Length: 444
Image 1 (cartoon, one colour):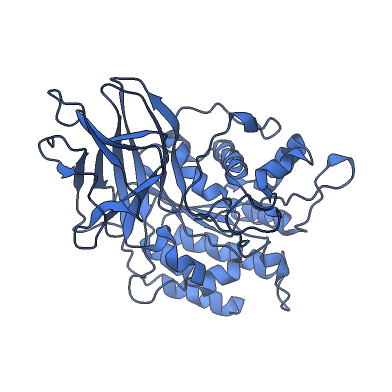
Image 2 (cartoon, helix red, strand yellow; image 1 turned 30 degrees about the horizontal axis):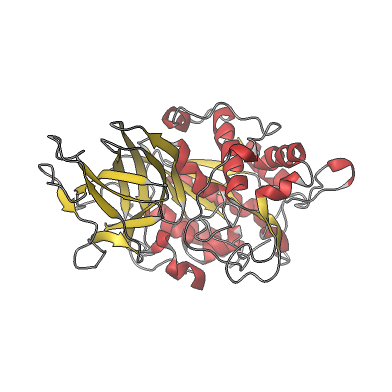
């Protein structure tokens, strides 16, 4: 698609009626887990409740949990389900934002809880409870589908057809050892601010171990009131994000006060058309994205590309992205757009780790680390969960530096982050999800 046609597309998008102002008819759910009596107003969920389309909720993807009944007067907290192995629980809901509240704990025993949502979006890091201790925490979670208001749909890649991010359910993944799941409440949150992510494989929610990207770690840092809607996909450029109707999709559900984070470059630098280049088509497209977000009363945020792990002499990272990061900085200045200079921060991060240690933030694994992996994995562009988490921390610090209003929704917990002082890998814990793949995501 030519830039002229892309601009015409942008003009046409103005006529669309935004569908995000309300989420009509969404259900509210209250689930009480375990074999004991259910609390008033809650649906009982026994360990045998497998997901079916007819029921619309249940334990999913062949995983199971065990029920425990401690008795007592408190019907809600007297029982729970538990497992030392990962398990999934899904609920069929329409597209939109939802406040998801979980209660975890055991009247008489301990528990260890670690929770992800959808395509391995991190929600809760390892959180233990003592006997008789319960925690209740809420997140705002975005559920999306490929349909575009007014007609059409997102052109998904074959690998996306099985992604949990694109199905018709809200899925929670419990990875504690053991988890103690007491209750779940799901309520529509149409007024929540949405942070839309437009990007490539360094941003996308990766479904399979050991791959990960910073976008799927971002939900962990936000309290209720902000949902992260990650529309990034591996191998995409600004042009192919447009061509696959992903910007159309984002704009069709965007509302005033939302955000659009834009990070591209790795794949844009491979496009060799007569108008391609950092200060030509790339710059024009960045300005198109910015203009379309602003027309809807939303806040665009430009993010420079993550650096590749490209060490040169003296333990310094060599720039492998040419003038693309500079072009982003220039557009941010020209258009008065908030900037998160992730390229500069990741350069500092990798250099602080060092040439050898930095491999532990990327998909570098010896042969047979994962099923069906006869050869070593050595990828200097794509991150593992630890690396993705560290980069998400950079993004959060970038939000603070840019003075985005979003920072008021950040959870307390991790202290301020300096990329020159990475979190020690020894202190990092990420229970692996059941799904893994040895095929490198598109893009490099």
